[in-house]
Length: 295
Image 1 (cartoon, rainbow, N blue to C red):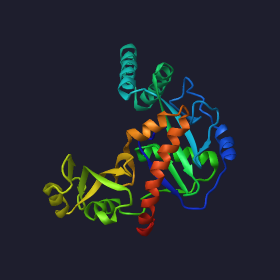
Image 2 (image 1 turned 135 degrees about the horizontal axis):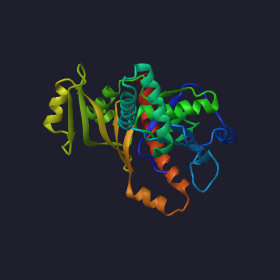
Image 3 (image 1 turned 180 degrees about the horizontal axis):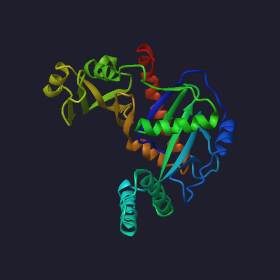
Image 4 (image 1 turned 90 degrees about the horizontal axis):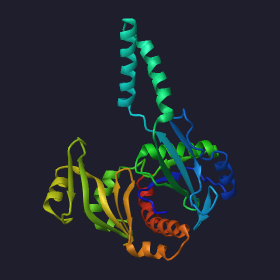
């Protein structure tokens, strides 16, 4: 289990739950697959394939995985079939259906097409770190993370979390790291993968890759009032990624040595433990800065 992205949430209360309790609650909402007339389905599946448990503790963290299935019914296909229905009525009855009738026809067409539609399946994995009061989700977008937290909240009844970085100026913090190396969290190195935006007009952007960090182009952009929105990082020489101004880690790529170490074990929990240990080490280093900045 190697995350490709990480969106981190902090519990704003001293929240707690046991593995047994969470397993019981998740088991009440298992993934059961799509019915013929469903457009989407959400449920919980085991995070590790060799076990039937829906929640497992690994390295002191609670792991869980949600599975989502969605029917693929493009609006173009729906509209094409609707147009055929409308045309058939015009030819048979010599009239054009009104808006209400067209809406009813559209729902009828949808009902006819849904059972035959293809579907796609995706998984969303996460861990809960009760010691640090964190929820870490393998999601690159806010929409997917919100989908996960909403469903988890429904399962457990209360989930008092806030996105890490919600109350800080992420762009200012990333710019500070770039300009003042001494402010970077311990174990943080930068790579030349930058996206900058103008503070007054975020539609004005600049992208830099494969340049020296002290390249004059980057310095000029910063001097003109631009702020860093995305920045390449290396975490403790074990993981490359980019971080954006919402404090989301994307394109996580773990070192060959770490992956080889995990490969020495047939237990998928080894991947999970090495991954989360690596990320947690860096997150602990950066957390004090976020607290000082107002989180």
